[in-house]
Length: 279
Image 1 (cartoon, one colour):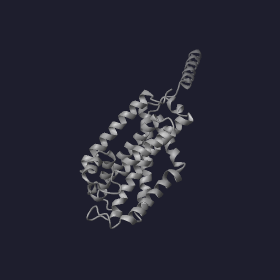
Image 2 (image 1 turned 135 degrees about the vertical axis):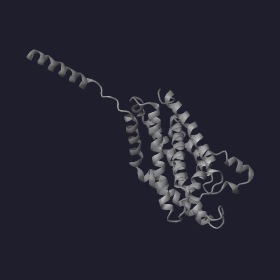
Image 3 (image 1 turned 180 degrees about the vertical axis):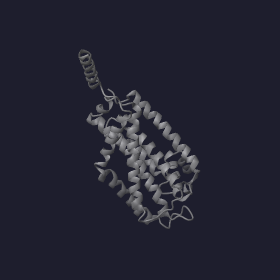
Image 4 (image 1 turned 30 degrees about the vertical axis):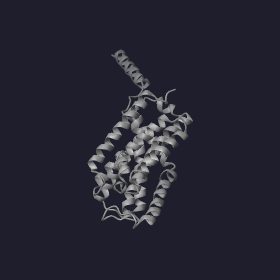
């Protein structure tokens, strides 16, 4: 009997040793959570620059444009020009900072050579995509909330529908975070990311109706504005404040959602193929 017990104990000890030597079970999405946490820390450690500076810039825009154009520009009958500016500046800050977060993070990793630490772990391209885009969304919303808090000192716009506000803020920042990811993958140096932002993102943002209503534009430019997807992001976001917009918010939502799907497919394809990431 004692021999049998010794055999059983030896077998149990061997099984425990094998289990200890075996690799730990993979916990779903642990790679996504780790990369997302890293991206959050990256921008929050320098929040004075990544959050404080954009809030100050938007506040200066409000002070200058409101002082110069208040009483000279009339958009909606029941809305002052200063109140009209607030949602546009908030959304512009959300979009620009969501793009900056993912694009700057990826190009920094490529330039410094530590992108290999993202490619070597068993991370799927979907997890990489989700972590970068979600972190960009968070930064965009944090900056947008800061801009809104400061600009409310100067004007208190109505809150017609918080659901529309949040929906367009989330979708718009996701689109821009994905575009930033595409730019970061495509670029090989900081100058190329800067060119992408200065010659594509910045013009489309400023020409999207942040400081004016597209109905005030002459016919050719009015039609061109409707080809700008950023216009629908800002117009739909502004609808959540005033209940008034240049186009139907459902149409804006459909266009922004289709834009997100399109850029997501492109980004996922680039990640899955290792385009300019695996050399």
